[in-house]
Amino acid sequence: MKYMLILVLFSCTLILGCEKAQQQSSSNTKTFDSRVVGKWLDKSPLVGGQITIFYKDNKLVIKQDFLDGSSSTIGLNESKSPLGRKFTQASGSSYGDHWIIDSTGNLQIRDDNGLIATAKKTD
Image (cartoon, rainbow, N blue to C red; front, top):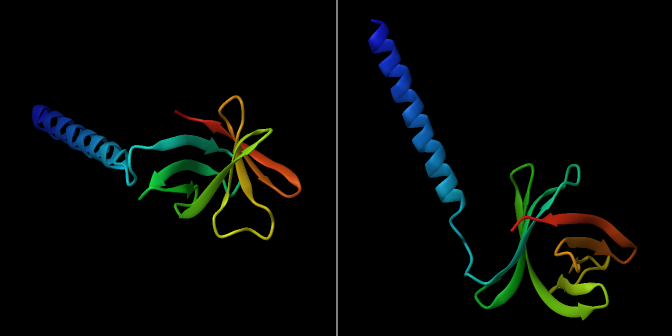
C-alpha cells in the first residue's frame, strides 16, 4: 500500500510538472513578429504589469498585460526626444500619454505633467 501511494503521488507530481512546463511554453509563444523593441515590468500598484513594445504587421504597438489579467494593445508612433526614444499613441491622447526608453533601457511612463512611473527592463 505504501508503494502504491508513493507511486500515485509521484505520478501527480510529474503530471503537474508537465502542465506547468506546458503553461510556461505556451505563455512564451509570441503573438507578434520577431521585431521586439523591448519588454519591461511596471510595479505600479493597481495598474502595473508586463509592457512590451513590438512591431505587428509592420506597425509599432504597445501591449500592456495588467496584474488583474486584462490587457491593452495600442498603436504607436515613434519620435526622438532629449530623454530617449519617445512613443506616443497613434490615435492621440488628450492627456499627452507617452512612453520613453531612457538611456538605461528602462521605460518611463509619462504624460503632459511629467513622469508617472518607470518600468524596469526585463530582457
